[in-house]
Image (cartoon, rainbow, N blue to C red; front, side):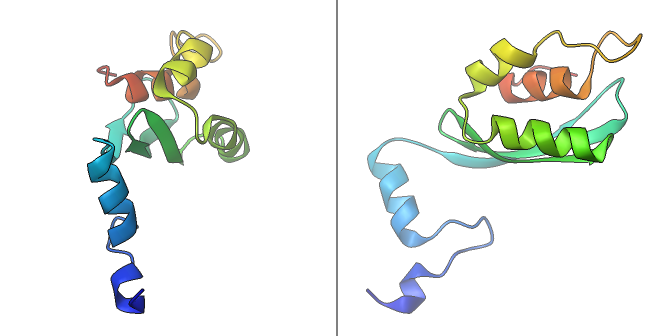
Length: 109
């Protein structure tokens, strides 16, 4: 295979991945979610079909959010939501975990 053909584009996707995704009617999309009511201000992730990857938080409790991102890596959006939706932080009605669940479900903050 031509090494140039395997170079990744700016989304990290190479020609072989794109062809696989076309054949399987999948989509890969980078999403940014603006949080509401949490210390983290945004959540970014990649949606690969119904699988969530590359979760990144801006702001918030760095260690805890890295752990949440690692634990949720490669999970289906519905499984993330089942575990995290409704989680609260202190006296707040939401949390960074709850906001991640809302983000992967496509809900408003």
